[in-house]
Length: 256
Length: 256
Image (cartoon, rainbow over all chains, first blue to last red; front, side):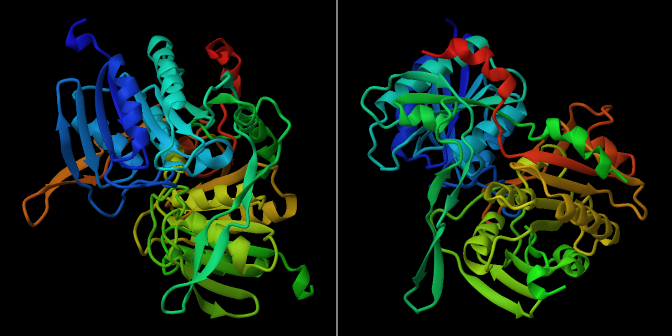
């Protein structure tokens, strides 16, 4: 295979370029093509699809090999995708993989996740995109199953592509042997008890985000939380068109 | 009407508590009920649904009247909604209105918008929620039409409620007399030429976000960009379930 025929793969994350999860992802994805990493220079968890509107961003080249280039970026995960595709890559990539996130991005977490935000951004730009997360927040988590399944899904995306406007959200449970892969839907739910109130060293009150997830549909075997709780990796296709098309007709009476 | 029967309305934005747009929104919404404002202490444009995962946030009470309380918050728009509902309000609000944003949040901008992020958050928590934006970025924009139409839609939401998992995204064109309100879908598209390369005072390169929107479906009269370009306010119902349900069946072959 000549170099120019190798798939070009953009990798990013939200835990930062030095996280263990992205290094394990690079290892597993590298055999599939030429890899360019553009990742935040430090953690950007919970950044959703945030973009740097006010301040400029900076990019540093950390590794420059033929088949593996690594850049760090001072921006958000979405900034990394935008600048990678707009400025750093010589052509549009064949695949974007974001992760492996330290922690679950299942259920409604897709709305807050920087890992998923990066995949949505690839999708907006027209690149087949996949977010990969492991349900373990620890910095030294065991990413072997997540890397194995992530690579397998990435290969399928390279072979089959994805429909316009759809990207994938893969969550892998933190267990030694995952039972299999289940195509799932986004579990509905929300967080409760969201803040802890504390005092700073000056005695002023601060609020620190925490919270417990409340699953609104726990028995639905089609949901990603069900798959994860039952030993499966959950693969949810996400669409960037957020229009509630079914409700549009009923809203016609709102027109003036 | 006794005080306890007045609707409780949470107002936020992403341009910050001192922006003209939120002051015009407060003016127009105040007659509809008891208003509590929880807004960022400075601009948070492009923050999407970002949450403060790493650092604590602080809240200051700026105004404390019976029917109008105003808090500023050091967090993101979504943090403002979370802390407002979890800690500052004595009950779940009957309505959340976010805005009025200085600048359009039509089309794919819903993905990046802090104004829309706040409305999505209200929706996740189960509060009928509405984002309002004016297609004019200037700090001294004329918000009169946006305030008038925003109030009218807010009244309809108070009367009719919204289905679970659906919130509203209202964009108002920057013209003296808007023709009417059109229920619309999110226009597909993306941004091109996204960065300007500049030098900082030390001669180091920086990238500054800019870009031109490319509309992938410009002739579709159902899209919000079409409505805005033709003198209508565009009202898009957005759903927080991002699952591409129609594609799930076709993905079954991906299971392992």
